[in-house]
Length: 240
Image (tube, rainbow, N blue to C red):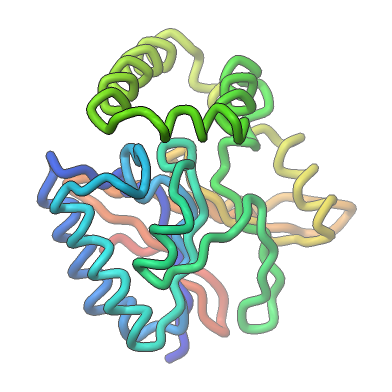
């Protein structure tokens, strides 16, 4: 059976071996037999540059390369945690970095892919922060810093982010109907796949008077690993 897979928000980190071993197993079993894998952001909990030599990251890169070398294409979209994934990472793994948003056709159906954070249009503080950290000159300056300093700065930013998350209403941090409709209308499409919110679901909505669908890929946790599987018959969420 032909199958294309979508995942997001694994937040892999060296401090959680269960999670990355589960991901390695997923690559070696289900992905190896699939037509393609799309990773829609936040594969890593934090990515401080392609020069990070942590052994866990090296194992993950080797595993990705093993799958692409066998002929299964892997497409990776940067998320809000790993937006510094770069060309060196892509060359080492033979994965293809894709833009946010991207439009693809799978088994005859057109899909818009996005990480999902830009759909949270009411969270203006975050969107302002996102715009700043995506400035090319600021990213270049950050990557010029020693790795130990980047790790220190990342911990500080993460601590501030956790405080903000605890004090911001969940509704503000969720996607809005306006954000969803806007991206679908702009791309002239009726199927949207995204992650970021950690709320796996399949939503039915109306765009330009037509039925549309929003597929939310779930995050990975110790007790669950949600993927979206698309075949010729449609898409379904599956807990591995």
